[in-house]
Length: 359
Image (cartoon, rainbow, N blue to C red; front, side, top):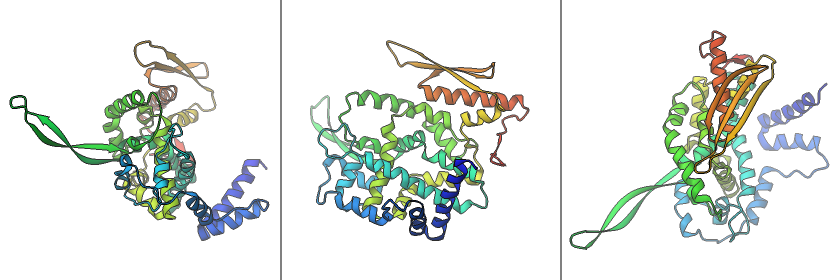
């Protein structure tokens, strides 16, 4: 018997405990396998983190609009401050790293619980695919760029003839990532590049997420957002859970920002969400898939990436103009999958995965 089979049985028993009585039952089963470790309940663990957080800390002026954006008022404002504080920020005692680690788990718990409502309709493979489509860094970074609050500002405008000053009101948007406290030296340049790519791609991505038949893996990868964008979404979830003690509150936030809406839409329309590189491995039918990635350095502009995909000894496709190694691999795999589908006479039909067609 393989070690994976044994591990799967342990995990399935803990999962059965969750279905029977959620965290307390699954915890008691986990303790049976790990008697030497003091495993606290979720509530005890959460309370410990909550008690450590400083009380009576006022929100800085630049974070005052953040609670309105999130739709939740924090009992301990220090948790919200920590959730937005990058480790580079000099005037801090705690960054968002631990809350991001926690928020990642909270996100998975909520999504898995929602996916289990479809257990009679979906294979476990499809559940895994849909979960992956909603927890990956590129998707969460897109959420951080789209999750915004609109505010009003007043500027003074001088009349060129009279010289008189008049007040002029206008609206502007503040996305989640704008609230991050940091001391990153090149942050302005990073933001400009990411914002430019986001502006060019967002309409196509939104259309694919809301109406498309295939998940936009390569479009999301092309935004090439830094990890801290997705970290902020997860750290916010972690902070909300610690402060509220409620998975339902976290679920409401995920519903507000469209994560759960996307999940239900993917399932309803059976969106093809298998990653192109994984699908290409299946279509290769046992042959080795080789990604030859090269970077084309540029002194006066952004580096460009090139990828050649070979299956066995056969070159399938060459893709250039990539913004990163990961993005050009994903785009090359997507192109290779399309070519192989066509060559196999399927005219774009996805492969069979996990015993069911992804169509």
